[in-house]
Image (cartoon, rainbow, N blue to C red; front, side):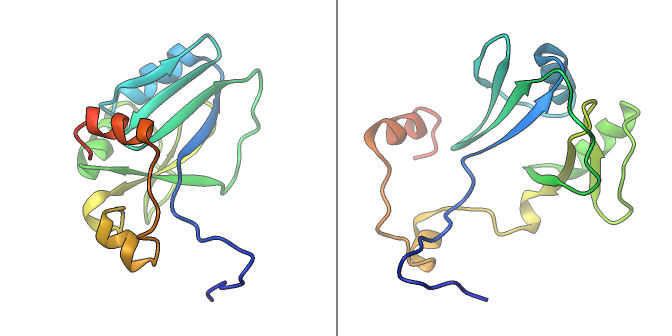
Length: 150
């Protein structure tokens, strides 16, 4: 189904995903055990893991109920490496079909290998989505250039 109503706008992608965690430092150590990342920023109650033109936001909360099915797919360059690392860490894989596991706060993560999905926002992809007219503001272009992504 395609929604082409005149008063709607196309979905372009995800800027960030926010996860609730019990402790920022513990969360950074957990994710740092299997992901190579740089911090975009950090405070006592939040941390931002840089993912090129996107980011993962970690937010400190006192309690978070565990979810049965809500999850997000995290794209990585080497899925086999992440699988090996999380197994070494003793993390339970919660899906026989996918590489899904929970962080210590109950957030369900599905690891997705880059080579297996349509994950790119190059000019040709935007054009193919009929979104070639979209442009980033100067500060966003500068941030991407500083990371070698523009």
